[in-house]
Length: 201
Image (cartoon, rainbow, N blue to C red; front, side, top):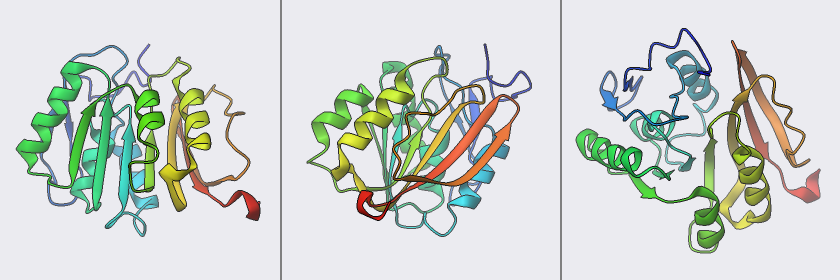
């Protein structure tokens, strides 16, 4: 079931809200489980990240339409890596990056969990991670567990945004991930965590 019955962004397009690409629309293919974060939630999220985003090294897991990662790039993130398993969706992301001339963004057509495990020691640590997998899957818990294990992927005081169904109990969040912001909208819950040093917890 769609996460919001009133979501108007089910027609294969989503709008960049702010930054250098403000008002531009990006297209995405019809892919099962792909549901862009709506305008209001994105506006809330990027208000939360306002002081942390410029120049940040960002990772968009399960990128889908690119609504989060491309918004971050538009708003001045220093680098945005987008991961998307579906070939058609990944190709659309690449086309949109070229169309919008977002030189800070790059997309990989890859399985997120495998990519995280294989590249943990080859990437600069990320300041902000967007984690919004398909609902009603086990991918969220698996991705959190992988990030908790691959600590070299996380910068000091990294921020991790999680979008999940309201009904989902996030009892797998590591103790040193401190809840920084929280919001619910309909049947969607948004959580922004700051990763503390385990020694400081």
